[in-house]
Image (cartoon, rainbow, N blue to C red):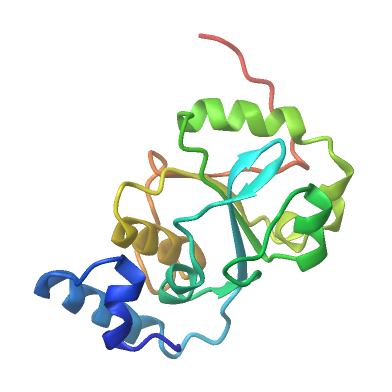
Length: 172
């Protein structure tokens, strides 16, 4: 992992309190010898897709992933997403509940681009609630990327979705 404890301020946007710094250092230790660091793209909108600003390169790296894009890269279309071949796709749609975000995903599940994404075949597409703090995003993403090393998020925070499985949503 390339995250140095001195970089915690750049990861979190502010100097962390001692407990948070210790927690990040412990997380870094748990992830240091992971054999694989999957490539990740996080989006905050589906139509058109838009990169999620909170999931910077540093956040993805701190969680044990590999950013599929560099900070400053732009995604305007689903073809842009397919071009970088992410192994994990994180959909954090801040204006929607998880259930509403799933309904929005179902509406685009028939796009041809899904057959070109490794994330589809690896079953690594998630709709998430990342929380309000960068540390929340790091912990949630670490749990998705490395569930053998970190606690996976609860179903209230993350749900796996697939364009290959058709789900009929009904109003209750």
